[in-house]
Length: 94
Image (cartoon, rainbow, N blue to C red; front, side, top):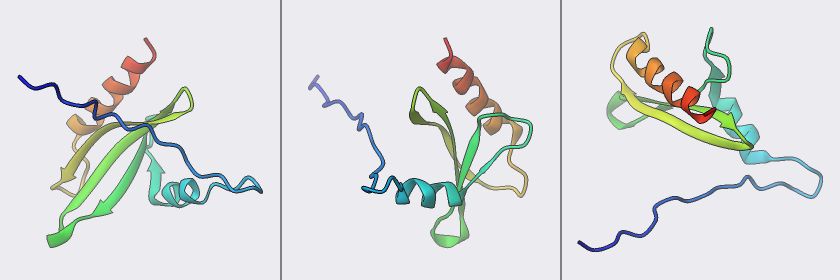
């Protein structure tokens, strides 16, 4: 078996000399926090063909941690997908 290179790719936001962080600000404009789920955020995006995608994330130790991504097929976000993100977020605290 051939060793695969590490696929982790740490990211940082660009910060201007005056302290603004334009990409973070833009990203946050695409997000909303989930009601009754403190610390859990959602990025909403539209895919080709009218499909809809969601990515749940949280902030942990100064990083944005992407917890769960899925293609949304119903109007209401399935509880299962929220539960996956919440379980992974709770696992970060340990």
